[in-house]
Length: 121
Image 1 (cartoon, rainbow, N blue to C red):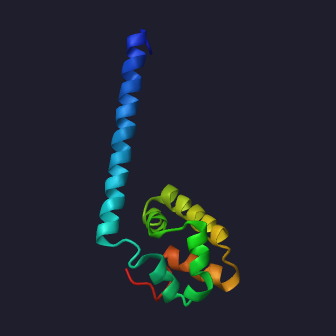
Image 2: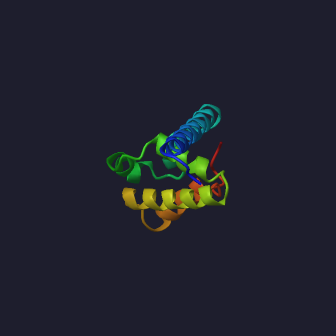
Image 3: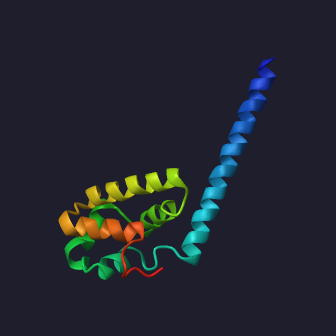
């Protein structure tokens, strides 16, 4: 129960500090992931593994999808159920943004979900 305006300021301060700490922890987790594993070659590697370089490299570039975005999706797919759900949304957005269709879309989806046998990393 808030007793005075001072309590509100303290509660806001604690909330801001907590959010800042959570953001910093998330950034450190991403940095460690990228240093230790990352996308194991990024988009170029993924497209090469899936034999889609010639067909879709330009689409990824035009959509602004980079290795960091790929790492974010892979990292989310290693998390808890909520993070995995966000990772799935990220995959769907990537597929749509890059104009992937049919078997190409399925290949990329499986690759990013970790089910592609040719994926290293």
